[in-house]
Image (cartoon, rainbow, N blue to C red; front, side, top):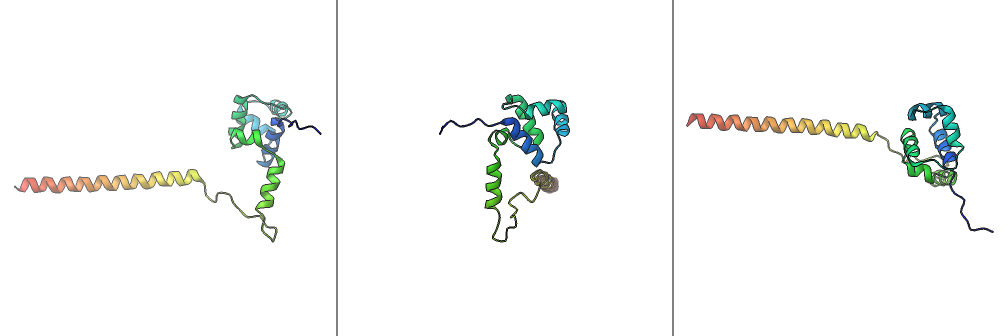
Length: 134
């Protein structure tokens, strides 16, 4: 029995993640500015250069490391570990869009900033009135 580890097939990982994302080869090709035939070739390749992998990862919405380390076994382990006794899946994902939360936070900070500016303007006006009365 050999102890050599088989290298990860990056192309197959790209294909599986693309399928899990419900994305066609054509859509991925358009996202990275190439052809469907190129995606077909990439998905058949055992290795992919880092620059191309980063572009594909960005188009798939995952870090490049996820593609490098992807395994079907890990997915089944995650599903198995998130199922309760009734075999229904527990949602451990994000229930909100983090970008929306960031934008809301920025808007709230803008409102607070404007309120602080208004308070400072009122202070200045009161001080000017106070000085002009003397």
